[in-house]
Every structure is written in structure tokens, then in C-alpha cells.
Length: 139
Image (cartoon, rainbow, N blue to C red; front, side, top):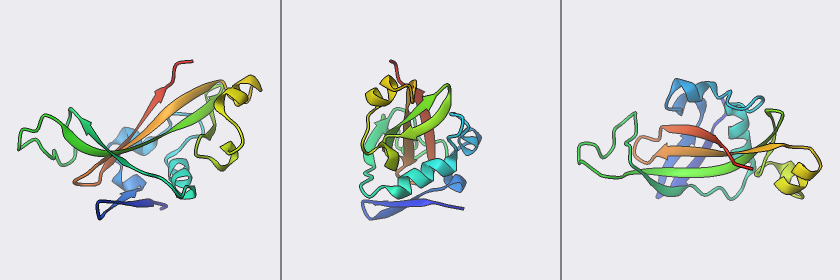
């Protein structure tokens, strides 16, 4: 099983299917042809992936970090990128090697793609479990 590992504040985090927080994410068939393995492969190809500290109004479903302390906001690490599709099928992302000399607008004009999605990887800063969220971008 492939995994992507990164370090934040001297703590190591793993992005792999076994660390995914819920069954929906383990099946990641959110975009046709865009599976969990593709996400890991894309992350591993990059040299400068920076997960940023983000705050959410809901605690981690796995460890409930901050609930006992009655925190108003909960710390997570987040990284996002864009995925592009044609007729609902995954074509490439903005972190794919093929994307280096193009742009979404150029691909849209050439008819290579017709839609874009933001892919967010949200990691609990305490337990390291994560979820992947996919949201369609408005044209």
C-alpha cells in the first residue's frame, strides 16, 4: 500500500488509505478515474507540498481533539489542489506533471476539460487521521 508522508512541527503524518477517516473516503470514487491511489501518487510527485494550519468549527471525528477543553475551533492541517474533468472523468490536476505548460483556461478552450474541482486533504493535527473533500468549482 502506497503512502505519502510529510512532517509538520516535527510530527510525521501519513496519507494512506488505512489512515482515511471514514468509509466514504476509503472508496474515493468521487470523480470517475480519480482514486485514492491517484491522490497519493500526485502528492509523491511533488517537491513543495505545504500543509497549512487550518481551523474548523467541528472536532476530529476520530479523537475529538479539543472537545474536552470546550474549544470553539479545532486545529487541522490542510492541503488543497485542483482536479480537472471531461464529461465527469478525471483528466489531470494542477499538480500533475502534464499540467506544467498549460492552464485550466487553455485546456477548457481546447475542449480537453470541461469542469474543475477543489480537492482538500484535511488532517487532524493530533491523531493524524484525515478526510478528503471534493467540491466542484463554479464556472
